[in-house]
Image (cartoon, rainbow, N blue to C red; front, side):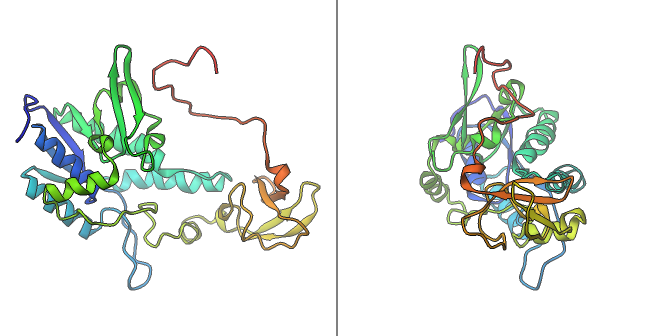
Length: 303
């Protein structure tokens, strides 16, 4: 039986997966006026005969999301965001690798696409909230909104939502955050959703074959420039195949001979050099951070 919420309108970001589908079903059960919305983010020519065009927004996933929406008797729309996604998230992914950093495009996608672009679109439709299938919780307190871990600590995604502001938290819901993954699958079966046993996608959504190296070779000339592998004394130990293909702390796959294990310490972009050293040299006592977001709206009085 549906519980009354005075028919508040809510847009659910649907992907065709079990989490967002159950999120939509729970909100329908709670009495919300639910609108399903799926974003077409990326399309890339296939890699070989069997590779998908991408890992998100495929025809099969769109069909699954549409079937779930039909079963729940809610409107369903597909929004084409490909140009904006390419100019922001994909370009960010490429440029960060070219600068010698290892990016997390999912965080940037949440920042710029889901909880800015899509949230603004939801509010423009006079919706009160945007809901997603993230495993996290939002709790309103006397001082504002708190972002908390989900019930399922193993699936918790609060980390990739750390950029949310008080203004955004006031308009977002994470319905599956109060459940474990097995419980979500049980709910999907209870609701009769056709995606109840669907596998999860673990890779970046715009990598059709899951190979980020292949992607960078195709889309970034700077990522493909070989250079020297140096120790901390400046001695050349070998050649790397492009700084973008290595990450700090990496040990395997360096292709160098040494009488002790060697790890990637840093990337010297100016010299296009990969600097390696021992495990002891890998440690750091300080770090620099940027783009800090205090969810409460202000910095704490002390570290």
